[in-house]
Amino acid sequence: MLKVYVITGVSVDSARLTSLLLELGASSTSINPGVPLGLPAVDTVLKEIRSADFTVVIVGPDGLSANALIELGIAVATSKTLALFVHKSADVPVILSNFLYVKYEVIGDTAMRFGLRNIIQGLGHSVSTQPKEVSSVIAPLSGTIAVSVKAELDELREDLLIGRKQKSTQLVDIGKRFEEFIGRVLKLCANQVVGEGIEVDHGWDYALWDSNLSGTAGGPITVEVKTSIRNRSIEAATLGQMRKAMLTTKTRISLVIYLDGPANGHVTEFPVEGITILFIPADILVSQLETSDLATFISNFKKIHKGKDDA
Image 1 (cartoon, helix red, strand yellow):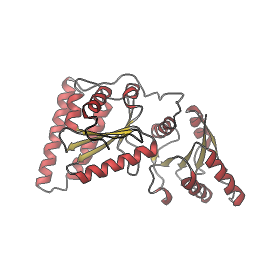
Image 2 (cartoon, one colour; image 1 turned 90 degrees about the vertical axis):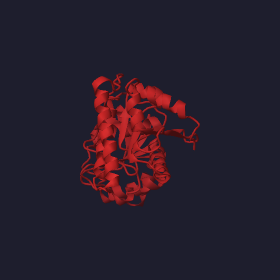
Image 3 (cartoon, one colour; image 1 turned 180 degrees about the vertical axis):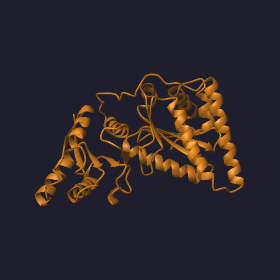
Image 4 (cartoon, rainbow, N blue to C red; image 1 turned 180 degrees about the horizontal axis):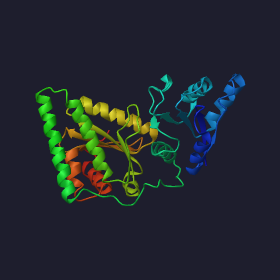
């Protein structure tokens, strides 16, 4: 069983968090945040964090106490892996401003479960239970659904071209519409899609979990939605962003889905880290999902593009 060091705010339901960690196959330990920290306590914190497999930081609605902030500083400097969760109503501590974190509503919600599960599996441990939302069924696009989806995609592409010609301020709105569009498409293809309520710095827009996807993609898939990657600088920045996020949270495969950019897409692999990033045009994604499920599409896309654009 994994050993986890926990840093929380005083308003966090510690009992519920402990139960969640046990459910996922991890035992937790922490130092009482109400006890004033002197040098002996700091030494104890340092020892416990170093001996833990990873550290969980829960910033509750009331933030973190001064003692917890000291623990957090030690964890940032010494912990092997950090799992950071910030309540949707809380401010992000300055010390975490350059780190990936997940927004949550209550202890044990879908976003928190996904984040913890991803960390634990990334460390090479199996998770004892699957979320209730997970199912073996993946529904591809077909029939009238495909027609409707294609029509909406064509409308988005046309609005993008008009917005560029007119230098319209509505380009931001088009980006939001496209992101929501991709979210709806993904929900037709995977039984669990985490997007709303999950916020990360330099991370992704959606995360997918489904038993059918695990055989192809090695577990959860993260998705970044881009309106356009028309030039190499945007593509390079996106690649760096996704690589950093994947290394931080141990994700092995990510999709970058875009409305405007290279017609055929490509695959970039980082063999040393064991991660793969697929750049996929939205029209290819939509057309292929008419005849195959998402797992099959990802597998075929990787085979077609393998070796063409490896890092």
